[in-house]
Image 1 (cartoon, rainbow, N blue to C red):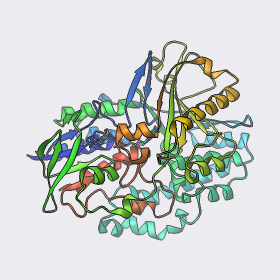
Image 2 (spheres, rainbow, N blue to C red):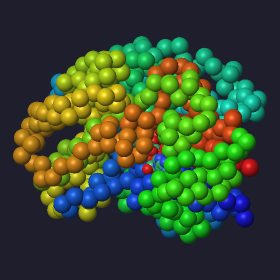
Image 3 (cartoon, rainbow, N blue to C red):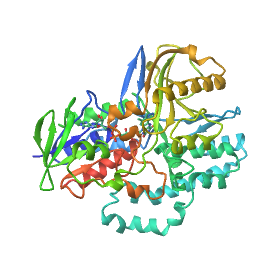
Image 4 (cartoon, protein in one colour):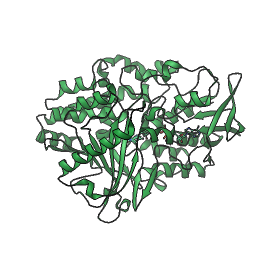
Length: 486
Ligand code: FAD
């Protein structure tokens, strides 16, 4: 049998391993941590369970199809429910908008609570769907770096509909032109952050993202987000994938522009096919020091990072749901801080995820497990200790004000994740959550391909390469990559 190695057990690495194993390869995954999942991991503290990274789950069929591919029934491994409410939005002026997942109901809520009409929302979501249909086949399901991608019927349809993609305006310009009420604009501008971008820079094409949440749906895995990692690792092991933990790959061995093997713990393992799920910048810099680097691609600006406080809260808040947003009063300023000044605004938008709302054993009785996150710039050597301490105060003040409760008094335990630890724990360049940002209209073409053009049989998957970051795109990168492997 043919052997293949995957570097890293992030979600894309695991999915690629499953796909290659079902294609007849004997796959070994080398993971430097003692656990799988990379950013998609979990931990416990004083009776509270926390998902460490991603909290929003869309496009669950991309997980299901891995089980089907291996001849299994997905339901035997992995269950999830569709959320009736996508998010609770709280504004500083007291407005509260409940984003129902059903488009009609959501549109009625906007109609009731803002100056925008029901029709304007239905229209927007239909537009979002149309944009998605035009882009998905060209940008998400194929390698952008193979000529054939540009000459299939879907691609041609895409070119003919180019105007509908709205690439020449920013997301904010499009949303401000469409909606009357700043509350509605802010709500939809927030979708730029789903891939770590800036609504005041990213092209309006990114208005495809709400389609995923409202039309396809937001979901909750019954075992929490970490259930995605656990169930896929179980499947991978059952079909024969070997996972080597605490195995940091130190070098990719290349001979005559072909893959020859990898060096792990000073031992060389021969391989002729390698897929790197390690961040692509670090793959070149650390594992391929003697190879010419695609400098332009690697130096593209990176997405934002995150600061997360995991708080065990000894009270329950019936007004909150699984996903909650406490908006800043000046959104523009927040993004200027993030992307221009590379710092944290003193009034950041606060996201709270509470998985115990759907999985009560994630917190002790009467308590809740709060995952409190703000967007922060990627790591360029800021004084993080100071910034984190200030942000903690701003967040506590904001939440105490908006929830009419002294929040500090309710915190039973605390952990923190920030750009430096995201970088050190998952080897993500600058601690970026999603690889490159999508702050310009060429971004999709400036991500690294899923294969190396200089080294035969070297491939790439994961959030730092095509088609991009986030669980769904990482799963799609695994699919594209596995299809390219000969
Ligand atoms: P990663 O998770 O980055 O894993 C890479 C793996 O490779 C790691 O395990 C690392 O240890 C290993 N590795 C690296 N170098 C080596 C080496 N030399 N040798 C061996 N192993 C190595 N996405 C969503 O869809 N929804 C969300 O709500 C969401 N929220 C997020 C919130 C946070 C706080 C974070 C951090 C991310 C979030 N994301 C979200 C993004 C999502 O988590 C990532 O896009 C995705 O998990 C990245 O997966 P990946 O396969 O690229 O690999």
